[in-house]
Length: 409
Image (tube, rainbow, N blue to C red; front, side, top):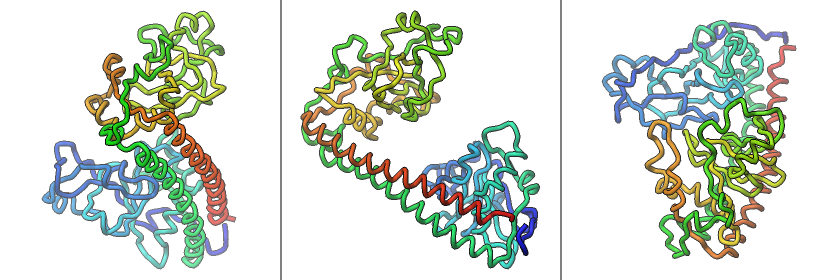
């Protein structure tokens, strides 16, 4: 270990406290907000994602010792993918107050500011040294579910305060560059949305008076151009083979990732289910669950195969509407609210009946204008990909800095 560096247990340097298990019957629609796991994302506190409160009487009475303070470091401690834990760490600010902790959240306070800096501890929580210890304590799970009993067993690397300040300064600068790159990528996303609105307006209100067509008027002449995946026993486990024709899953639509191939069927089964065939250029849509309506375009060179029961495929006539405009309309918040509003938020949401879905109405601006938008969008996406590549390189450099500065030797 480096000279003057010590190894201590976390309780020797920091006070920490897990939130109480507030029951559902205690929730109110006003009062003091409860801090939940979902409020901690990308190193920030976002309270707009919850409308759960407890009464002021309970917050400042029974739970007053769980009220967080400005400057507290908070983490989510349950149901988190291990590799994403670094995003579930954030500081409480004045504008968040008053705020009460809830279950699966833990806050930290420094016991002695002359011994440890809370910003140093924030970076320590993001180290491999910390996560490796945590994984050993929580065996057999891909998700983190831990509490004070685990934290008290973890070793904390504790350099002199001057070294801590040096580490913070280096990592703050590197982190600021990473955040600026992420913000730039986010701005490009907003740019694409603003270009769409500038060119076409609101696709539901249709202030520009564009021609309107239903989905069944926009697909190609293939009799199976709109098709929901096969139900019943068509795709039982016993029909799958080691290789052959790919069975497309929700994963492909949700992640726009067509590299994964888990399930295959043989040629006989494929011919039997040919009505559900997927071709490059088709749009596949998730038809159930919390990701209802998520979609992706099947890229060129994709494996020949069929959709499963959780997907729907759409083969558009691109002389009437191009895929890109269709997707931008389909994912527009006003469009989703109008056509999916009654299907979302009711337990496990499900896709509308096919007869209803085929009647969904789309604006159809001139194809030349659609193609102009597509050209702008593609250029923006190429720039965004370049920024993603730069962001990945920055992430590697940041992790290298973390490793170097938290090295024990």
